[in-house]
Length: 507
Image (cartoon, rainbow, N blue to C red):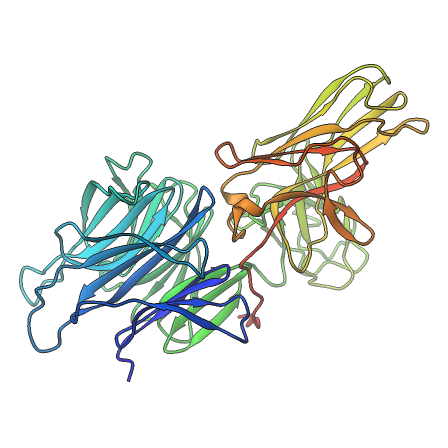
């Protein structure tokens, strides 16, 4: 009989499951209908799985397993353990280290990001009535053979869940609320803010997507949606009631999954209003949205335009069919540039794109075009002298490509156009495409990112059809992909994804 089950954590073709009876189990889930047990770990008699985190860094996939002592009838004497396992090849796991954790209270949760492990622990209470506090321990795991304790930070409350991003750590700390901690310098973590609405509030779980945090509570089944663009001043933007209390929150694509006594799946984002997002699907605020007609629209008459809110939302409720909706944001472009309301209360989504750049060149001249996206990342096209068969205007513009079933867009896409009399490439040009950490948050294996070109039959590697072209170069350190291109068209950075599609429950 399984006395405690830790929900599996998956990454690509690997999943890790922890149970009291069987310890940690590594599963091959490449074929969901034929899940295979690869390895089952052996433990000292009193150690049981507690928390797991997985990180893909520099082409390696590593699992961090935290186990704790859990005797029912006697005090525990065995110290908690951290086991580091290389699962890059799911069929050949390699234990890189197995160590006793630094002193502290009982480990409750762990997260990992950019080579640092964030462990939260419950410190013993001063007395049975007073709730205990928590401790954040930051460990440097960049070298699995040598793992120093970098720093510690005490905080109020009993930690239940921890989430780590580039510079911030979020801790759901029950009676302590939601703590946001600056870890931009891991040696000196700083508490930036605490979100707590009332004394009886018990923050039980947290999920974070960019500047938006979803926070659930233990007893009253509240779901709070916070704007954390200024992490020192969290702002409540929405509140919902969950059917049951939630022990864990998970973001999968555009869905929020709350698990507790059961599992509830929410469609993130408003219905029926529209939204403005970037190529990653992240909301874009302060975009002015206007209507060209339709006196019954909530944006017409006294309020002819409205800026999108923190979730990128705007309302078209009551708009008459045939009304055109137009966004405006500086010199940026949108896809589509204009949308027509087909039915009242229709949800319309616009994608914010970088404005196009153009250069006129002759057959024997060279040029470099730089297309800067909405994140400030520069895609650079270098056209050497003699690359074109004739004079042409070369244009790079942002593009919102059609998604594929097997590959996920990594936040970067553009269209290359040549405008000239029969102008074409006589020799390859070179394009360097950068990407951010946010671009690859849904990519399961960053080493497999490839720049593709869209054709009528699907997506093919960018250099296909180019003569004397080198293979694509992917620099994992600078996060750039460089490729040869010799055909105008739509190009996109694509990679494999862990994203799954589940039934939606709109609430």
